[in-house]
Length: 202
Image (cartoon, rainbow, N blue to C red; front, top):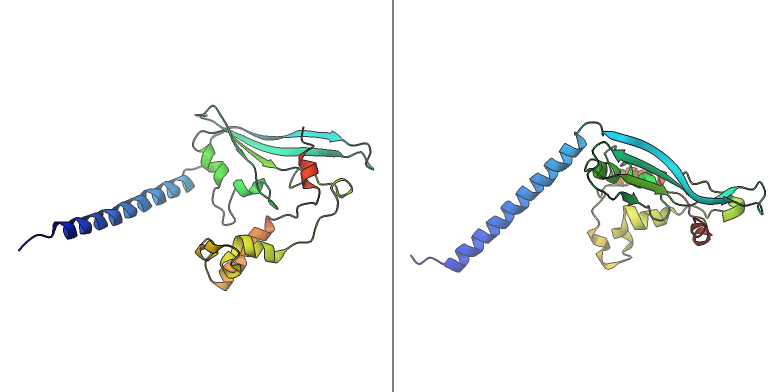
């Protein structure tokens, strides 16, 4: 019987690809589980500071404006000369990086365990960087649909071609509701004067 070298080679390559994917998945999963069960973080320092800001005497009460809250942690075994600085996106705070809604470690812990100093900010007038409505203006109303469109169920709104590929939350109503609630708890309203506020950080 003649041996079909091309067909045999194709089968071997396909099998090798499957094995590679399985092994890679196992390694990634093992690393993830190990990180979650690695015990307490060993830190040499954990604290916070504020950067920038100024007293504005032109506003009633002369509030401090334009300052930014920064939380930081230094690992006991610092292995890298440069820190990781984490800056959150719109309608969010630094809590994006310090934990997950289901209690797992997040990016801050990930890099700390690998020997990086980590700095996590709350941008100006968000989170622990004080917001003054008589300086920055009134906050806009909450937009539930926006949160669903961007974070929870983008495949339902089809706002971009790849929206159907969204798989971050299970496609079950109860799970979706829990996911939406978790995201909303960490979502804040962004003030209208954010560009001006961001420009006062010096």
